[in-house]
Length: 524
Ligand SMILES: C[C@H](N)C(=O)N[C@@H](CCCCN)C(=O)O
Image (cartoon, rainbow, N blue to C red):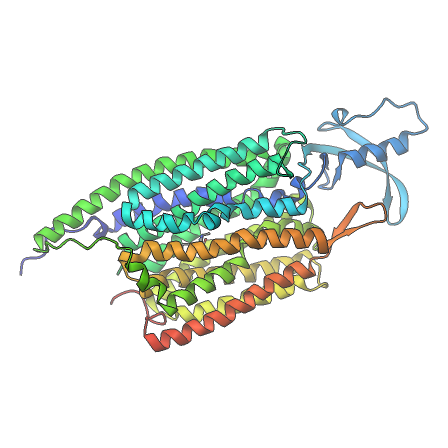
């Protein structure tokens, strides 16, 4: 029999892996910007500037000047100003060391300016990623646009929105708004949040578009591995953001520089997506040609609104969606507060504090594709989701404990969270096409992301408020002395407990409906 001559472009290994790398790079840039501000929480919530010393300690400059003046009170010393503090300067000041007043001598490494936000404002800003997605139903429309207008149009639109939002966020942080307010809120927080919200629309719609791209090129092939690799590349973006953002902000003395870097990479990501569009066009042409050769004339029916009924009526779909909401509510919002947690609960020096949360995405870079391959070849997707949810809960219970405040303990717990954060995504995302057909997949991913965004928007708001009102400790003079993280971490643990329950129900539903979540993805 004559072999089928006309092959689809996606049948070529090189072509489909190239397509994957290109779209994953665009997403990686998006993930970098998503978390670029997370390590800056302490700086953003500091009023005035902060002096960082060569021994990795830091003091707000106001407090440093007061302590220096205390020592110089009897001497005819020149008057001290913030401007007189500069890199390399050796300073002497009176400080309380082990309960005794002592003269301390240190060398200034850098001066960085804080923004004076409250923890509540930081929480509001961190949650703003999801505000437009949730309140203006943008993700819902994004899914419809994707299924109606296609991968090329939607991807260009969404990566353009990411870039535009990043520029607004950078402008807000680089500008001095003085004491200006909008509706009673710090204007800088409002403008930065607006930029982050627009970016969030772009990033989420890019996320569903890229998911559909991967299913288009990898269905029936290495689907879970491809999805795992895409997530792994995205995690590189998160890890780099968590690891380098604070050192860069400290070196440049400004919180806006890491954001500017993120905006530049997003511009490159946008250009990469244009390159992908060329490949996508060729893939469509090759599919069309292969169909004609096989004598298949009937075009695939387009998406109809009534198709949404199939999605809404599927219990399996709703269980995956709720699992996604609970699981991700326990991870992404946690990352926004993790660096400060390391500084104040585990006494990690500020310059290293971002590196411990960065372990989380770094671990997932290797493990997500590994678990993805496991799912492709062996199956057991629903079980992987249960194990990941249990690990998430244990991790947050351990972080909530008021004891074991050692840095190495935080490292061990973060590594366990990294394993959980590899298990669930590597099994959950490739499970969606087993429940929902390709034609409605864009809308299905969009609805999942929409519900997930409710958590991504509201949880940082909740945690910021809880830290502000219930976790912050003050001395008699009203100065912040530290934080008690028991309540915020218990809230995160509760999300994990809900995830366990839902994943158990999902496995039960799979056994009833035979979605195949426990079966391998690869056709032998
Ligand atoms: C934040 C975003 N909505 C999200 O859920 N991202 C997932 C990856 C989704 C990949 C779907 N194919 C993540 O784990 O980062």
